[in-house]
Amino acid sequence: MKNLLKAKSPSVPKDLLLSFKTIKLVWLLGSLMLITSCASKKDVYMFTSFNEPASAGLRLLYSTDAYNWTDLNHVFIKPEVGDAKIMRDPSIAKGPDGTFHLVWTTGWKADQGFGYASSKDLIHWSAQQHINIMANEPTTVNVWAPEIFYDDEAKRFIIVWASTIPFRFPKGQEDENNNHRLYYTATTDFKTFTPAKLFLDPGFSVIDAQILKRGHQDYVLVMKDNTRPNRNILVAFANNPLGPYHDYSKRFTELFSEGPNATKAGDKWLIYYDSYRLKRYGAMQTTDFKTFTDISNQVKVPEGHKHGTIFKASKKTLNNIKKEIGQQ
Image (cartoon, rainbow, N blue to C red; front, side, top):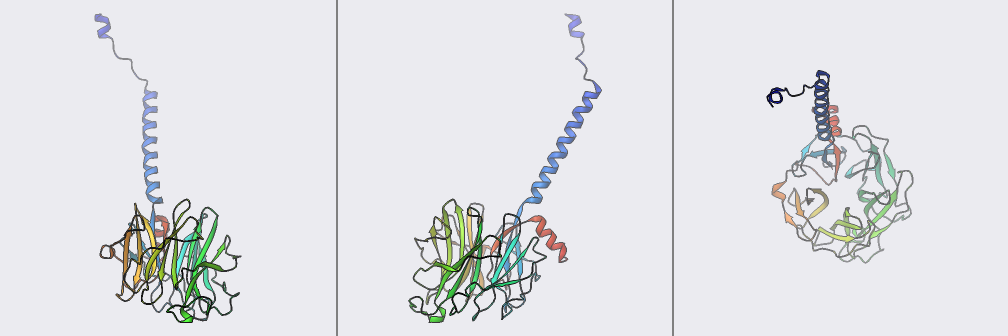
C-alpha cells in the first residue's frame, strides 16, 4: 500500500504537451478569425436618396439599426438619361450574385420610361439606360417612382411604377392627367423586359408602391392613396408578389404623405415616408401591418432626404465606399 501511495502520477510526454498547446492555439486563432469574419460580414442598412431639385443624382444614407441615419454626403451617379436629366425616387435591389440594380424616375411629364444602372460596389456604375417601358401606350403621361423587388421564388426582378393613361379609368376627383394606376414589368437580365401590364387598380389614383415579402405566399404592398383629400399611406395583402392584393387597410399616416418604404429591424417593421407638408421624414412601426405606432420622434433622418428605398449591404461595402470618398 505504501508503495502504491508513493507512486507518482504517470507523466505526459513533452511532445504530447506541445501538441495540446498547438491545438489550443489553433482553436483560439480559429475562434478569433470566425468572430472577426462574422463581424465583418454583418450587414448595414442603406437608404437611397436624392436632394431637390433632383438634378444632382444618387445619394446614400446608412444605418446600423434602421432608426438613426447618416448621410454619406456624396453623389454616386449623376443622371444622364431622359430628356429632363433628373433622378428622383431612386430604388435599389441586390441580386443573388451581389449586383446592385438601380432604377429611378427620369421625368415628371412626357416621359414613358425609367432610368437603369447597375453596380457591384455602389461606387462604379454601368452605363445608364433609359428603359422606354410604356412605349406601347403612346398617350401615357408619366412613369413615376419605379420600385424594384427581387422575387427570390421565381428568380426574377419585378419593377412597379405609377402611370397615368388619360380616360383609361374612372377619374373620380382626379384630373385625367393625374389619375394614376400601378403597372409592372419583370426581367431576369435587364436586357429584356416583359411588356408593361396593369399591376393594381384599387379604384382610386395610387402611386409610390413597394412590395414586401414576409414569408412564403405572404406579401404586403405599401402604397400612397393619391386622391384628394387623402394623399396618405395604406397597405394591402396577397399570396403572390403580383397579387391580386386585397384587404386594404385604413390610411395610417397624416395627410400629404408619400414615398413610403419599409424595412424589418428585429421583429418590427419600420415604414418611412415623406411628410412633405410638415417638411420632415416620418416613420411608423408595426409587427402585423394592422396596427401602427408613430415613431417619427424616435428616428433620425438627415434634412433634405427625399423619397428613396432601403436595402442592405455588407459593412465591407460601406467601408470601401467611405474609403473611396475620403470618409475613413
